Length: 153
Length: 349
Ligand code: HEM
Image (cartoon, rainbow over all chains, first blue to last red; front, side, top):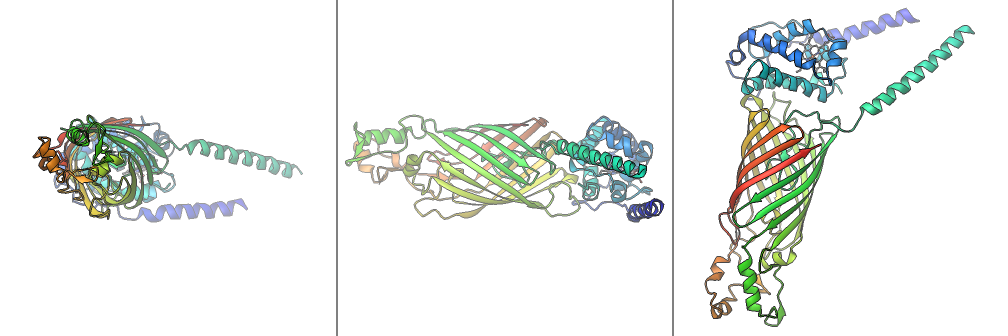
């Protein structure tokens, strides 16, 4: 019984996970639109990378979420991909090479409480790398709609 | 045989596992939650609902997300020129969906009604009688207080004030208050039609993160005079009407919000005099004249103004918020220029 079922199960899982990952992850259309110079407000693309490093530092200090990243995450890969994604949604001319937000988080059972914990880490990281609150909210606006696909509980 | 035994063991094991998971889920499903981002629970408005200072918002009070419940206590103190408002209450938000609140407001009127109280006493004579009828104005010769109980409920209907920054659909909530003013005699003196009444409202709230701005628009269906502190309705009846309210807030920092508010008020008692023992004060003019109190009736005409305020709310952490405001409430009954500072503290648990 086992091998055939396992194969089918894996195929289905892989299929559902793989399908949405082809979906486009692009800039968010916010209302009103983001500032044209949002990336500059963040200290350029290098500034964004500094922030992502800082973000993961605060994420790993938060008991509400760090266990999820320890168990299912790959911090180095996530820092790399989140840097691309953040640069992209702030208006940078960058390609995002990772999975779609829906695919990356589908099986994690993330709650809105955990999503907000990442938002709080984002604000703390902004303060740490001296990105202003106003500039930080440009990113908050761009990422907030992903709550709909990242939170699955 | 051996196989069956193994299977049986496995069954027990899985049953134990399921039980363990269930148990851990029950402890995990702990009701208490403070998962909202700092400041996004709003503060307590004077009627006790979650919102700004004078207007209920579509946000659900407290820090609970849809994963739990969270409550708060608030105390508001507004020393105006002639009146001082104290308001104490408790509110609970359930699953970021539903909100219940109870507030007790107490308005000490200082010297405002002292004149009226004195006239009533004087006109009524030592026995407190006017034209043979006992007078009960609800006004002590000195320092009258108006108490009001307010029960509120709010339910969030649809929309995302915070997350849906890629559309313009606001978060919508509908809610209501039941208000019971305790000083019925004073309300009769001031000619309000009712001492107890309900109000209903619909609120639309949206945060625009790219410009750090929150906008709330509320339509309140009410017959209140000064939010009910001067009762509901007037000589013309107690019909409710729709009154708009607007809050505009700027997110200055993640823990500090500044803003302005406006609430339309009614005119049920506009231009009305004060009634003592079934007589208008104007009708009492000859009596007042003979007592050397002429010209008083002119100063005893009631007015009501729209309310405005400008506020700064500070959220040092998720357990405390402090709102400082300057409230411009205009005419309140017979006294003009009721402006003053406003302080509201909210403790969340
Ligand atoms: C707006 C918020 C978020 C953004 C922008 C975001 C972004 C990302 C990105 C870019 C990846 C890499 C995808 C890939 O490997 O191809 C990722 C993976 C991951 N995210 Fe998030 N994420 C968010 C919220 C969260 C939250 C709230 C949690 C958990 C509490 C979380 C946990 C994870 C984990 C564990 C992975 C690794 C999944 C895997 O490799 O299988 N994320 N996220």
